[in-house]
Length: 122
Length: 222
Image (cartoon, rainbow over all chains, first blue to last red; front, side, top):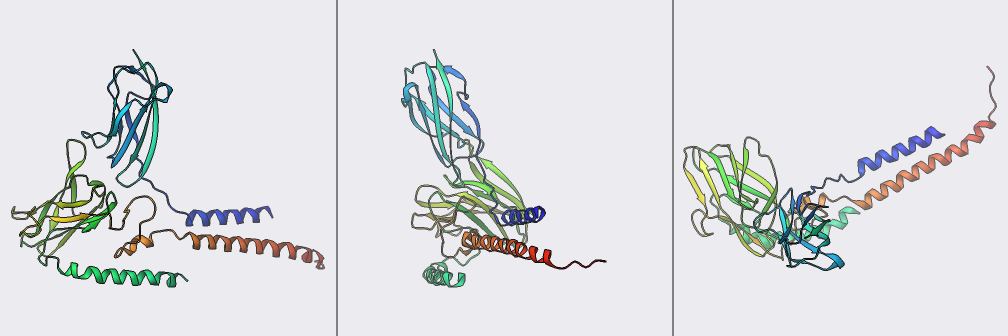
């Protein structure tokens, strides 16, 4: 009886495996960020960047500081690098913990989101 | 069931083709380098085809296609007998695609690739250089009414999305039936699964019922 049940399960599993959709998404990956994720940079930095391994169709980049305050200005695709997001930072930043959140649309229409944290010190 | 559901779509397609036919007839008849499709939706991942007829007796040896601004190629089909090289812009985007190979005087060379269309509506021009076996070059860079026009594509929000190589389903577009066929039929798949489960349940039930009877059957001693 047990072998019969196993056979049923294996038949079902095979049917699902053969009939299921084949998923092959061309994902875009983060290659590097500035500042690096988890790193400590100076409060005098002027910009934050996220560089990917492939070209971006469009994207946004937003940096929030202590207390969730938005400190970035005009975060989008870097006009000088089609694989990079660039956000300018406001002046006189406080020391503390910061978070950069990004969203991109790949040329194939795939949407991705992500974030990383870094610290600023004087 | 399925056939009936598709009939109105087929009629729609025929009507759309009839509407487009005069425009197709008006296209230049001479053997021109052409990039298709002629119309795309903004930001849509599109399967582009470059049609390269050879007119000169020496045949085509090299094609350089300039990629219009804001067109982002991401996947290229291999054309047998031809090699491909990319020329890049300073910002890392593709400036031109160069194919080298051999097509004789009456041969058509076709090249296909996936690229997202510009997000802004308007017209883009595909400038191309075609080099023949004797070293002569035809520059397909002129205006549409010139002798050697650059192929153009209109980017418009009124065009159905193709979503070639992208995520999710493509919108049903006239003249592109293959996109609809690629979609998985979840209803059919669900019904198949239900049928499979029913068969399994039936076998289990029959087995359970036959077992006691088998036990009652008189055993024949050897």
